[in-house]
Length: 321
Image 1 (tube, rainbow, N blue to C red):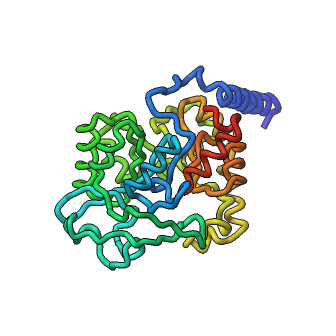
Image 2: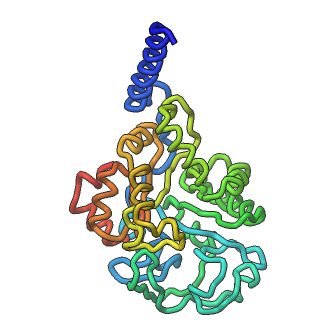
């Protein structure tokens, strides 16, 4: 190949790289920053398992405690009972939470058992939560009690009735712009967006992989992104405060590589400049809170709303949005 061709290729690659880097740092040139979604610094996982006093996950008592700690966002999961009531529960099967080996979908709402009086906190092995409220709540009750509190609703089941009912409740209580669709599954997310396209939504796993591919190829600044949130684990908690069921992720080299690929401050800053928030989960120690904000995360999801509030209050630079 003659030298002029090489020069043209090098010039093209260099020009592309320079333009990509410039737009990565200045995304507002091509993309208008979205502003209609709640800004989330303090996020309560399952409503927050514990706080100043201990609370059972996904109960009205836990949500109230999180709100008292000025949480910016409640993170919850929803399922559908046999009589088609939308309830707030992390698990479809109730064995872990109640001791009864039954599925929510096989029981009418009034037949649902109560939570155990003591539950282990998944992301704090050896720690347990307790509380006086052990009732599995209806999503509608949560909307009624906390009308102005942003809520992230994860849909794990490919259940069109559940999705339609959640969307209908969001519309009924006029919460479209403070309620977030969440699902790891592309197919489920597509159905959610059809039912209520006004609600902001997160990156699915597939879309997250595409996001990373765009970032490392230099194409990210040129591509429009409809999502409003990235919600991902902070890999440094693997094998420390969280033991993955995946044998692959239990491998230290793999988890370290995953962290190196995903925890990129330049990526987080680019997304933030476009109005796309990055939330890292589930962090329960001050050192992890600090690390997340140093990475450039918009917010932290925790089981301990009081602990995170105390950290933010004592670190004003991290508390600022």
